[in-house]
Length: 347
Image (cartoon, rainbow, N blue to C red; front, side, top):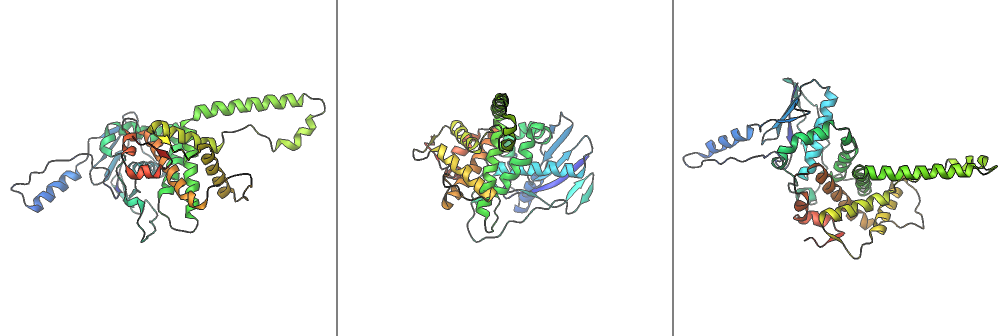
């Protein structure tokens, strides 16, 4: 089965190589034709799925995937959506596909349906992007990246939660309440990502909490005549889970460690994490403010959204693109350093 489609992207992520063009003796039209012919050439096959499947692309964003086995249209669409989400994160901009697809030489129109960006007269940060990771940099590893994203059970939390939440956060949507909506997505992205990165640690901790809870309840039940008194409180009692504020704090500390930076002196990360968690819970559950809790002020929510979603992007790219110096790329970019505003000493 062969699938062909074309990726639309403001930045040409698939510029995997350059060819020197001989200028002397050629007309402008001949040079253009030579460049176009070169851009239409597909890169050497990238094999994945234990060498059974092949991926190829050219400088124009045209992609062909040759599958050894037939896949359903839903499965194909899921694969391509995952690929598009990953490329969007690599590019630092929203990528889409042309709405058609060719499956075994048969063209399907309106196969994809992507939303349109809301037009605005305001300058968008989306237009001040750079290639965090280009195809050329990861082409040798792209087969293993496809294996991980498309076939590894471990990647489900990334493809189902983290990447979609990331895209939903950075995509420009202009409606009342969009700031709060994006903030909730940013926090959820961090929450899911830290559960993925620290899965073993969190699972072990939560198992320990369950064991302690079970032991304590057993001891209470052994007290004569108290078992019937436990029933009214059972619905309110449960083993302690890893709190959202701890996941946010862990992400901040992990970013600090990987980037080799410091946290600004005026930032208390325990309080900052708690305020982010309290604010997300307030916005998600439509509850009244607790007078004993502290929340982000309205003018702080935007900065927190940029910080958390950029941190999530950095940590995830570092996880997936292990052979690229993601740290160097983020530290050398002024926009990324601006978004990661609670860090300092970017040496």
